[in-house]
Length: 368
Ligand SMILES: *[C@@H]1O[C@H](CO)[C@@H](O)[C@H](O)[C@H]1NC(C)=O
Ligand SMILES: *[C@@H]1O[C@H](CO)[C@@H](O)[C@H](O)[C@H]1NC(C)=O
Ligand SMILES: *[C@@H]1O[C@H](CO)[C@@H](O)[C@H](O)[C@H]1NC(C)=O
Ligand SMILES: *[C@@H]1O[C@H](CO)[C@@H](O)[C@H](O)[C@H]1NC(C)=O
Ligand SMILES: *[C@@H]1O[C@H](CO)[C@@H](O)[C@H](O)[C@H]1NC(C)=O
Image 1 (cartoon, protein in one colour):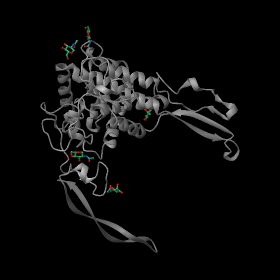
Image 2: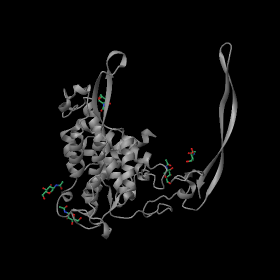
Image 3: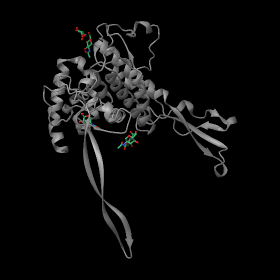
Image 4: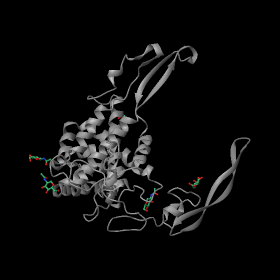
């Protein structure tokens, strides 16, 4: 499997590079390919052969040592998207084209398929979580001492509040470098992203990427360790630390649920679609979208929506994974699945373990 993937890789890259030449604005999200497991080792391909925009290739050539951090950021983002949406009708699956063993010129070349450019709430989440992944991964490299351009946050050294019994120490995460790099790497992908030709989707993507970065900044917290005689905690050493990426994903999922519908106009300033809500400002932490989502119930080959037929659902759940919601009211099939396990194991003197074979039966429900 791994072998097949690596053989097909050069073909995929040629294909992506050709696509970028044809359509420079498509380049906004192609870096996301770096996060696909079967993509192999981009370090070996060299910056010029990666699915990056011209500007990103320049950055990559100047700082090739960042490539593994960029790749890890993409991987984090994709993994967390799938984690947050695993129970939803749209489950953030990576498109069929994303298995590099079968790239075909007709297939959608986005990692997330249609949803990567549909202008929906799902597009918003994708851009936010991917930009956040990049910040998180680069910041971790900074703190690990793997980078020359950044390290722990030195501004906090020696500070703190000794009278209250604590001082800054250890390594505080400095997210400024990661945020700056994420902006330079993701936001300037074409001339059109700043010029007057900037379209609504670009505006939306830039806003949501920034919302992702803001989420990482907002969820920075403080960790402390106690010192003192037998754990008396007379003195505490504290440092600032990023939240786990799962927490950031969950925060962004909440932003997704409450995302703001904005006008699909070629304007730089985003405005709410709802007329009576125009006066409420759109905050930079909000996720915004321009197009309503399909309901993701039925297969739609044109849009590349797989539908929920065959998805496993939970008969007793009221949540999105419940059979009622997930199957869109179509009902479900029940299969009996047998598991055989070793059980009632006993230690027999001397020296082996004797077990029985136990069979358990569970019902598995799948959407009609
Ligand atoms: C730092 O570099 C080492 C050695 O190259 C690597 O094993 C480790 O995963 C890196 N850590 C981070 C957080 O990038
Ligand atoms: C952006 O536009 C300038 C001048 O219009 C051009 O020289 C440059 O190559 C363009 N950059 C990209 C990435 O298209
Ligand atoms: C920017 O995009 C618009 C419409 O998408 C296009 O007509 C224009 O030629 C593009 N400009 C540049 C410099 O790429
Ligand atoms: C996500 O949905 C697709 C299409 O319905 C399905 O094939 C896949 O198994 C689902 N993935 C998970 C983790 O449920
Ligand atoms: C199904 O949903 C119920 C209620 O939310 C939960 O307690 C149970 O663990 C779920 N079952 C599975 C297999 O996820």
